[in-house]
View: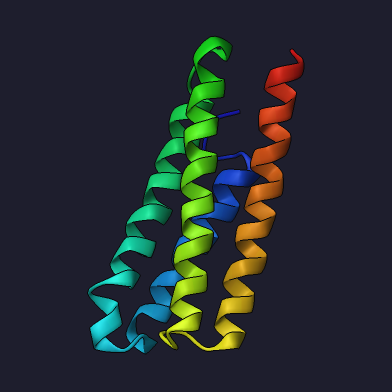
Length: 116
């Protein structure tokens, strides 16, 4: 199985595609500030998942923990976009549901590494 076949990668990829669709709907003043951070953080999460999937078990846990921190940052940034009205509540709910699902997958992956 390669890193592109794992469910957490697919879900993160879908999250980025959804964000890309929302880009044009975000007000210009927010598009070039908070939205860019959300965009970059999402790409960092995808990168972290790919890197972790290709690493040995010894180095996988720190990589996953860094990715988990990035995911928590993303949660805050997306909530901030909602609170500043850069996105509406419906878009926030859709993004947050996907982020929560990725978080559950990532948490399960981290727990499975710790048990081994």
